[in-house]
Length: 308
Image (cartoon, rainbow, N blue to C red; front, side):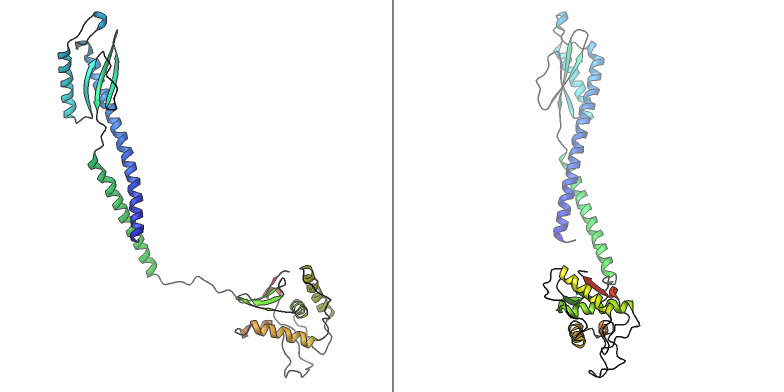
């Protein structure tokens, strides 16, 4: 633990221990005083009939000297016991109340007798070293535990918990852009026609995995219908579009725009082109009758489509 953390830990624990210790000692002192006073009052009650205390009912003034001797005798016993009280007086007159004066009343047959004590509520100051020692020990213990944990963690080999997310093509219909999920900052815009056509191509090839799509032949009606579906979705999302594209015309240009956009975002990930890239005819422009621009082993699950 750092010095500041140790200092904070010590301060907090010292305040806690000090508060607990103070409350405990206050309670114990009060309890001791009440117990000791109760014992003396019980003794006086047993001896009251033999003490020459003034009695107005019988016009008896009492014997002050004898009473004081009795008080002194009681105080000697209390002193030997290191009691927190000292017997002040036994009289029919109630002593004035002070913070350090405790008065107990004894009810006799025809008089009230007041037993007055001087009480000592001072705390033993030397005892307050206890919360200080406890705070130091507590701080040292937690510092040792924290350092032990830190050493244990440092001795363990680093484990790479971060698992690289599989790369996937992301198509955002809201912005009409395509990107990789690992590099969304490199998004590339696509025009309406190639964007809708590519999504339709993916969905159509997923449903017809063995289809051969040749540029020399007409685009299948089902594929055009799917492209129309995505085109109408763009309109629903609020894109201003003048007219519906003709998805069956200029097929080579549409595919070239799709490939160019994929080239931009997959320049550093050529391995992804096998899945996402519409194949080119061997010897570009050869118009091969066996060439297919269809996508193999791909489905919508391989694309994160935003705005669908």
